[in-house]
Length: 263
Image (tube, rainbow, N blue to C red; front, top):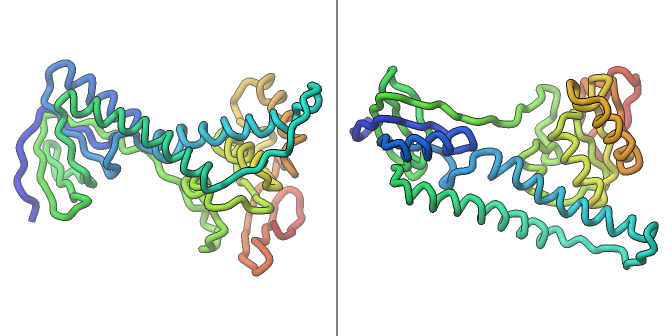
């Protein structure tokens, strides 16, 4: 049984880059606002598990690539040594600093925050299951649903710790010797670039005939030339249809190339 809660003018479900700007603006305009999110700090997927950690890793990847290319400029440096634990700690500090700033803004604006998962009960009420236990009913005049996104698990993928989605890949638990990235969109390209710079032999498979479908061709062609020298393989018009877990690795079956080999 949910405990009764006060009625608010606006309920915002989701504290990501769609939810928190809307909540902050509504509070600035004088509305009584309650925000609900499963993360204790605002930021959503972008700040916690997407844009910000990926850009932090890309910053390091760019530096490593420049160090390796410096000899072409007449600057000779020792090969860089990457400490994964220190890199992970630094990436987490970047995320913590930004999300802590949003907490301060939320508190300054006087928003009520409930740490939990909201489910609509009727057109003007929601039941929030709190992370710490218990439920609360929140009644509202208006509601903004900004629930964000989550990685999709492909049906042919085995339940194996060597299979990562974008969230677990950004945790950089280790740097695999060989890595297959499925999908040539911006997320796949970011992860491919970072892991290749960190030392993995990366194969990128994209089912379309080009990376970043729908993007400007001049940009895509330039990016393809850059990646050709940094990735182990760049496979276009290639669809992964099956993945089997084996002791030596994950065996992948392709459609388009008509080959299969361990990755």
